[in-house]
Image (cartoon, rainbow, N blue to C red; front, side, top):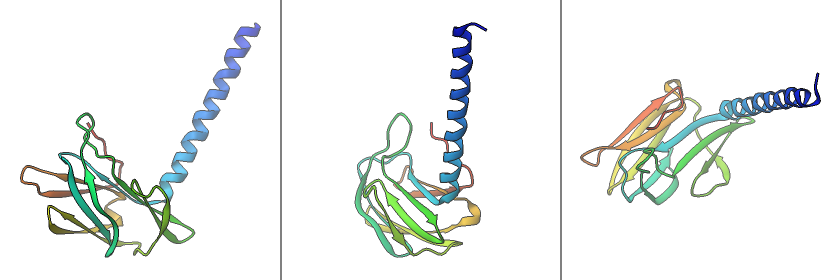
Length: 150
């Protein structure tokens, strides 16, 4: 075998190993996620307050959906580590403990001065997306699979 061919084979093996280890890391991280909250389409400089189980997560976050992929830059992730729940947000970028029931959670959003309440059940999935529609009405979608954005 030529030296060049041998180098190609070694590079392919290394690339394959890197891809597999990267997938394994993502699977491990994904399995620790309890809730992944995203804010999707039609937000235009809207201020939102978010509460999970009556705990204020952020206040007056300004949401603007990206016109190309229909998602804001504001997100919330609740992870379970060693039997405890930790939350991180785009606002804090660090994680801190939160009390949350493993099966049911309450998410309250204050949007345009109105408080809207949502019940989140883990059996419906860990991915939660909030969108706003024509009449500034907030909708919530909860799925088992990660959402796709256009």
